[in-house]
Image 1 (cartoon, rainbow, N blue to C red):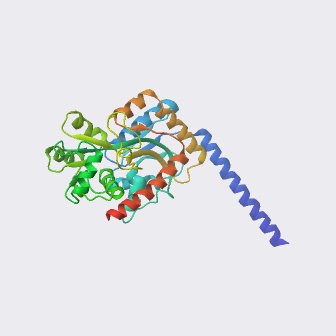
Image 2 (cartoon, rainbow, N blue to C red; image 1 turned 135 degrees about the vertical axis):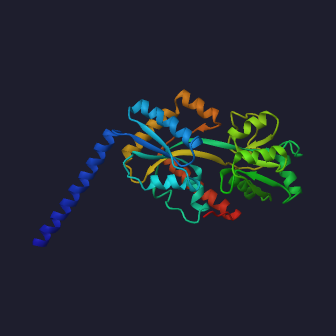
Length: 329
């Protein structure tokens, strides 16, 4: 009888503890935010993650009247800042403006990742998606994607492509192109987009897959020829340039995407409030205009939709990275 009473007491205590935790979470969600929020950008200041974090952060501050501090935490292809957030307190006050690299690509690209993007992070919202452009030197005898593919088939292994560096979206988008078309090209890595574009303009390397902002001035100036964009639909910045999907590579889609994540186990109500606040910010005309200027498509959506994207992108890039035999320490 004594043991029965003891067990009953333990069950009651456990139930009360769970109830207290649930009550505490509800109170936290109702009063959130009541102190400054910090958003980390895992790349150098001035880049896309930094700009997007500041855009969203400013709107949250205006709406919630709480400071939003944006801090760059670059290193190891975005892994340093991402790991910092993954190991932070799950209270909604430490967030990451993440990107396709540290949230999806790096899961396979790096031999050892200090965090698990699916288990250690909670998706909040996808903010923007940025297509890349397949651009060639004007002297290349290919006026469109179909002619370009025919040229590569006729001369296998004879063409090089420039990228911003090993493991970058530019590099892996080209490898996805090779993977889907079964064509052969040789990778010439550079130390950034600038040097890669300069050498394609100069004809030292005939082609590149590059993001919108650095490449569009060269295309409009006639220094490079755009053959295709890598998104599922055409870009408003290059409306006359077809997608690869519609011009020879059915099903092709590769974008550099950005979104906010929190540490795992942040209460659902807080995730929902963050999603709602950021969704409102993304839909504001001045934010949309800035995204358009960056060549970005605003996305928004639910945490569940963003989580589904992250999971599917991990699988897609795993196949490409393994086929290309790319590995970083």
